[in-house]
Image (cartoon, rainbow, N blue to C red; front, side, top):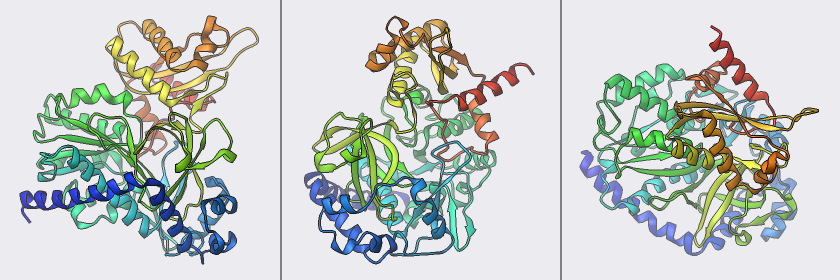
Amino acid sequence: MPIPIFNSVASFFLKRRISQIELFKDYPIEVQQEVLRKLVVYSIDTEIGKKNDFKTIASYDDFKERVPIVSYEDIYADIERNRKGEQNIFWRTSVKWFAKSSGTTNDKSKFIPISFESLEDCHYKAGKDMLSLYFNNNINSQLLAGKCLRLGGSKDIYENNSSYYGDLSAIIIDNLPFWAELSSTPSSKVSLIPEWEQKVEAIINESLSQKVTSFAGVPSWMLSLLQKVIEKTGRNNVIDIWNDCEVYFHGGVSFEPYKNLYKKLFPSKDFKYFEIYNASEGFFAIQDQNESSELLLMLDYGIFYEFYPANGSEQEIVSLADVKLNLNYAMVITTNSGLWRYKIGDTVKFTCLNPYRIKITGRTKHFINVFGEELVIENAEKALSLTSELTKSSISDYTVGPVFMGSKTKGSHEWLIEFDKQPNDLNKFMEILDLNLQSLNSDYEAKRYRSSTLELPILVVARKNLFYDWLSSKNKLGGQNKIPRLSNSREFIEELISMNQETAFK
C-alpha cells in the first residue's frame, strides 16, 4: 500500500477512536466500575480468585476489603512459579511474557507478567491512542506519511521454562502488529540488537535514508542517539537531517532537564513534544492537548486505579471517584496482566477532575527526606529547569544524595551534575538552585531558613559521560534504564563520585 494512501486510511481509523475516548471522559466512574467488574469475573477461577472469593465480590467496597494491597516483594514467589510454567495463578489465560523492569539501577530485577490481553488492550491500544490524540490536536499532520524512529530496549528476549523475559519495549516490538511495523524504523531485527553501541550504529545506518516524521523513546537515550546522528552526518540539528519530522513522543523519565537540549536539536517553533506515561506494569496516561504538561488518565485499558496519599496511610485509599485536586497520591493498580492492588511506586497529582488529568510527581522511594525536607523529584526537576534558564546552562544528567550531620556540622544535599553547557559561575548556579528549591518546597525552605538544619547544597561537577559510563559498567545501557535522581542514602552518589575522581587522576 503506498504511503500516502496508508496515511489517509490510518488517520481516518485513528480519528474514530476519539469518540470512544470522549465516552470514558464523560462517564469515567462507570467505565472504571465496569473495568473492575470484568477483571474480577474473568479471574474467579484463578488461584487468587479462589483465595479471595471473587465469586461474592459485588462492589468496590467488597473488593477493597477482600483483596490486600501488595508490593512486588509480596508476590515475588508466585511470579517465580508463573515464570517456571505454572499458570492460572494471577490470570486466567496463559502468561508467558515477563517484562524485566529497569525502573531501578540496582542489581535486582523485577519480572512483571505481561498477558496477551494487556499487550492488545493496553499497550498496543495506547500506541494507537497516542496517535489518535495527536491527530485530533493536529488535523493537518502528515505523521503517517513517514515513519517513527523508535528506540527500544537493549535486551534480547530470553527463553526459560517456556517463558520469555526482556525489556517491555523488546517484548512489544517482538509482537508488533503489522501496521506498527510498517510505520516504524528501524526494523525489529535492529531494534532488538542487545548491545547498545552496536544497535545505535545499526539504527543510524538503517534510518538515515528513511522519511522520519516522529520519534519515540526515553529522553536520555534518544538524546544520546540523536547526538550521534548529528555527529555522523555533520549537520547542525535533527531537522536538517529529517526535514519532515514534527513530533517527539517521550516518557520514562522527566523531560524537564532535557528540554533545552531538545530545543537545540529541533530548532523549530512548530516541532511538538507529546508526553506519555507508560511502565512495565501498564500504559496509564497520554498528553491529550498541544503545549500541555497534563496527561489524560486512560480509563478503558483494562486497568483499575486506586490512590492513597503519598505521605499518608494505605488505609486512606480511594477509587477514582473520591480523588481530590493537587494532592500527591501513590498509585495502586489492578490490571489485565494479573496484578491485583499492586503498588507501582509512582506518585501523581490530579490537575483536573473533568476529565481526569494528572501530572507525575515522582516515586514513592525516590525522594530525599533525611532532614524532614520531603524533597521530591518534581521539585528538583523544576528547580533545575528554572536555574538552567537563568544561568544559560544546560544539564545532561544528575543525582542528589544527603550529606549527613556530624557532631559539629549541619546536613546538606550534594548534587553531582553533568553539564552539557556549564554555567559561567558555579557558585552562583548553586545559590540560584537553592532559592528555586525553597520557592517550590516549603519544608525545604524551613530547613534552609538561617541554615537551621540544612546548609547551602554542594555541587560536584561530573566529567563528560560519567553517568553513561556508570550505567555501562552495570550493563544498563539503553531501554528504560534510569539514573537514580534522589536518594536518602549515599550509595549511588558515592559510587559515581569515586568513578569521577578515578578518571580525574588518570
